[in-house]
Image (tube, rainbow, N blue to C red):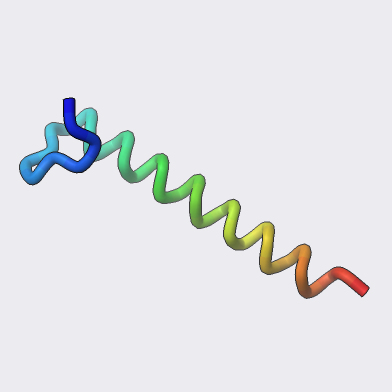
Length: 38
C-alpha cells in the first residue's frame, strides 16, 4: 500500500488529513514555544 496514492480511498484520505493536522499542530506548538522562549 503506497503512502501517497494518486487515487486515495476514503480511509487513506482520512489518514492523510489526520497526519496533516498532527503536523500542523506540531508546527504551531513549535512556533508558540519559540515566541514564548526568553
